Image (cartoon, rainbow, N blue to C red; front, side):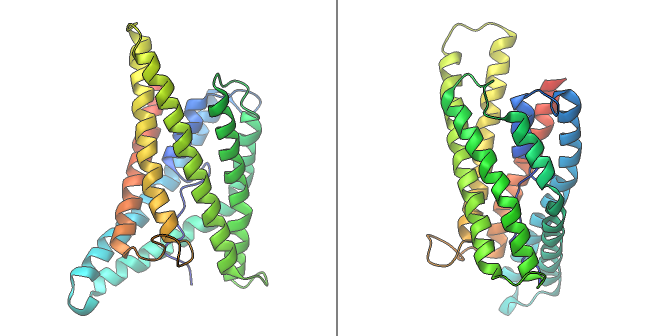
Length: 260
């Protein structure tokens, strides 16, 4: 059975906040340029929509079940089942994300275009964690589908841990950028440059919020015994995922607007 909680905002097709970060980096090269960024954004919309719908179903279904007598709500359970199927759909779609992620990682390289060394190496580590996530999730999916003779739970735990590491690094990266932007904003304003700096600061702050929401869910999906692992009710998972998804969609469209 597909796991309703295996909904991870990763990859070119999956996660507006992460896609917006890639659009903001503006890396160039064979895979770079405006066409690459537009292609990334268009593909992202597909997964953004499925992801948001999946979490919305989990939120609504979880609330209906929680508020019903003795936890009996046909509509609520139906919505939770729909959420599980949409989550499974996203897991299958991510089977094809490895090359897209690899293309982005090669495009970014060692981040020599970054002015700040901390941002540079945090970004490289994020890309590494993202890249390693995919094969781990693929093995977990194949093991759960009994395609491979492996223990699915171990691979799910490893992939979730990589997600958590990526999110923590992403939060650290955004906080570092915010610190640098605050220093720039203390200087005398210079028209359009000041507006762009404020817009960038807002985007990074929203990215932190999105990553924190996902990180809360990531810990919930870790093996029992780690902090609040396994303690969230379905509606709370759906709420946190919906917040992250909506912030990601906003960031993607906001980034595209500034690119134009």
